[in-house]
Length: 421
Ligand code: GDP
Ligand code: IMO
Ligand code: MG
Picture 1 (cartoon, rainbow, N blue to C red):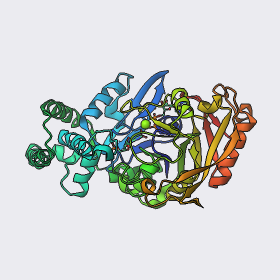
Picture 2: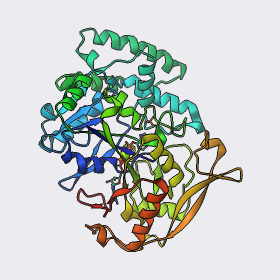
Picture 3: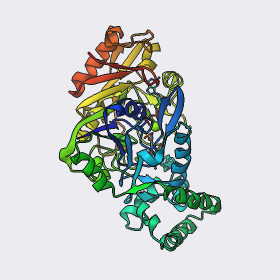
Picture 4: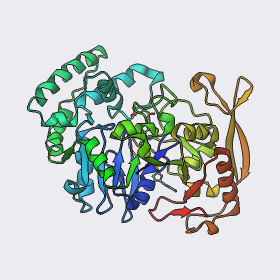
């Protein structure tokens, strides 16, 4: 049986914290897409840790963590992260497994990401510059190198061949930076990676399923950043939605039980692209300040706005969401009034559908106003202790989406999660 936890907005919904919380109920936690563009924040013994490549189940004794074939892996980030995790006394030789079909991010992928972004000028995606797009391009372009290739004696030759190809592209971009330092780090990290458990991911996970193990698939990014269904071209390069679980791990759809969608009580986005409910004013500033909305991977300030139910409804539909978790409810504590976007107005016409080209069609949000609870909620341990106005807010979202919020997160801490009901 496989349950999925994924983000329903533009990323940073708090997936890491939620996966860490639920991980204890599972035998195996697996990442199925994305790469070091992800930044998942957890608190372990009150210490903040940001994971980019390693699944968020890693801090639980006895749980297996798998980096699936759908992920793109940067050995340098992985090595750095393994060092951090090891400093907590976690033995990664025992609990981290990497699928051999996982594609590698090479130093030249990072350079190409940077060069491509620079060439876009005003139209840039706002990529994290971790090499994600170029690595996935080499995957679909059938050029990429995979983790399994590292064990081949001809790896260096294949690497040099691909590097040459990349160099020609970089020359076209007139990219002049010296990346020899990155390459040095890369080859050092590759040696480290070769010491880890490299497995045939699809047999590994299916034998675990056969043995009755419970698996949790951890999404990265968010549904609105999905390569097919997000706000293209301002998206990432993988399928972030539940469909990505099957191709990103090698499991059949029938194994999936719950799809747990995570949403903030408001909304954020980092990088370029449309964001209908964005607040480019004092309220937006306040959300950023109270919510500490700065990117976990790049440190960039996140754009902030009200919750967008049109986009959330779309995300629930595409993912087949069966349960909801609402995070950062405490961030709204200070607000006297709250707004929920229930409809878009496009060319004077009201709709509840996501348009083909949000950037061009510029939907105007139509809001329903709510009274804020205007009281501190971060200490609440039970649903009964939460204010009635917050419950109204939650109930409205439930009935709009036709899926229920089952947990409310009211702080970044591991224990700040209230079960509804
Ligand atoms: P992810 O990428 O979805 O895992 O989310 P990030 O870790 O990038 O961003 C979520 C941020 O919000 C992190 O700094 C978390 O520590 C923090 N966070 C998570 N849940 C809550 C919550 O309920 N309340 C508050 N105030 N912070 C939270
Ligand atoms: P987590 O897993 C928020 C955004 C980038 C950019 C676009 C493309 O922490 O939620 P990419 O580096 O993939 O080429 O960038 O996607 N982005 C994220 N935004 N959270 C993330 O991950 C993100 N990963 C990528 O800011 O707009
Ligand atoms: Mg994040």
